[in-house]
Amino acid sequence: MNRYLADEGFRREIVRAWRQQGGAGECITVQQAGLAGWSDEDLLALAAERDLLIWTHDLRTMVPAAWARVKRGEAMPGLVFVPWTMPIAEAARDLVLLDAAREDELSQRVIYLPLE
Image 1 (cartoon, one colour):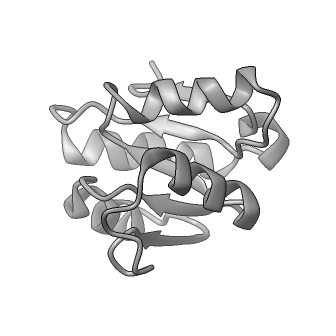
Image 2 (cartoon, rainbow, N blue to C red):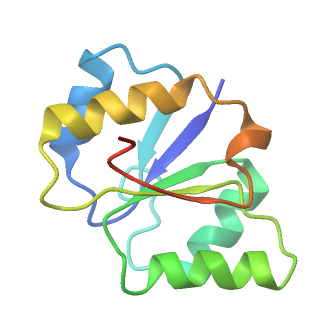
C-alpha cells in the first residue's frame, strides 16, 4: 500500500476528495507531520527515508529538486505534480488510479497529472 505526503501548499480539498473516492493508503500533510517550512530537499530526503510519495502543486522548485535527487542517484520514492487549476474531482480520481501502482513503478519518477 502506498503512503503519501501532501506538500505544504497542496489543496486539502483534493486530499479529502481522494479519501471520499476510495483512496487507498495513508496520506498525511506536511502540516500534520510538523514539517511546515522545511526545504524541498529536506522533504524529499525524509520522504525517501519513510517511503512516502509526495503530492505537490510546486512545479517551480519541488519538481526540479526531485529530478536533481534522481540525477545524483539518491532515493526518491516518487513525486506527483498536480496542476493547481486541475478540477478537484479529476485530481482525486487520478490519484486514486495511482494507488494501484506498485512502489517500484513510482520510484525515481515524477508523474504529471492529468494522467490522460
